[in-house]
Picture (cartoon, rainbow, N blue to C red):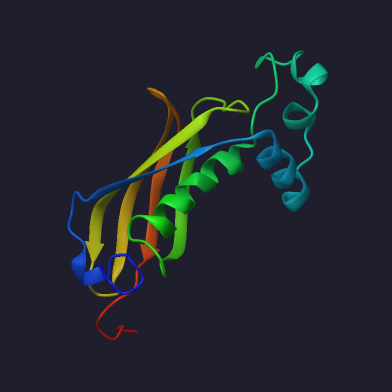
Length: 146
């Protein structure tokens, strides 16, 4: 662990994992709609959402995916990490009140630029709701190569 309570590039190993969980609240959905401008009725209007294949309101997919960002920033590699890219696949809806648990796993280390590839999987209980892979630049104890 480094001074920020995260991992520097030099501390990381293939297969390392960490998890982060967040319960998606009504307030989260409303605030995300306000911050993003995504006011799709399937997220905000229960009467409308009942007429959709989901049968009720669901959280924004990108709100669900943001739990991945929290896992990377707060757990692995941790504070100071710079997000470079994310591939994301939405597998199932998340409803208000459900808890999304994201697990990130180091799948690749790229020493030439001190980059880290990770698999990202979000679940509600045993159901995968979002998955993909990310590329990040963690902190480093050594000067970066350009």
